[in-house]
Image 1 (cartoon, rainbow, N blue to C red):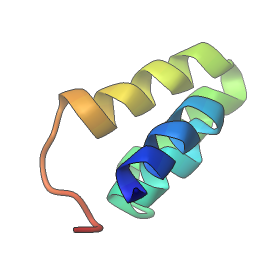
Image 2 (image 1 turned 180 degrees about the vertical axis):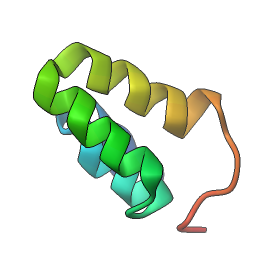
Image 3 (image 1 turned 30 degrees about the vertical axis):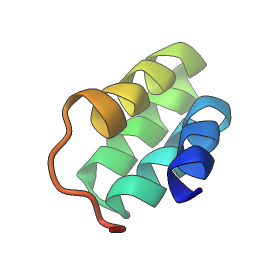
Image 4 (image 1 turned 30 degrees about the horizontal axis):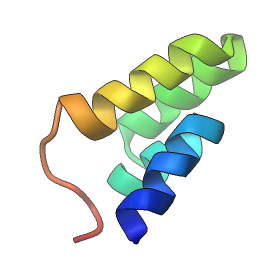
Length: 60
């Protein structure tokens, strides 16, 4: 259920999706800047960070 909420947040509000998955790390701040500049780069970065790059997740 949390994974579905994270996916929906990633699509609608990319920085929120990154924050849910990774916390307030560097990835969040990079995503926030990209989203404020233009939505699509923020969305691409959020999908990459949350689902392609993998790594450790903040919430188990």
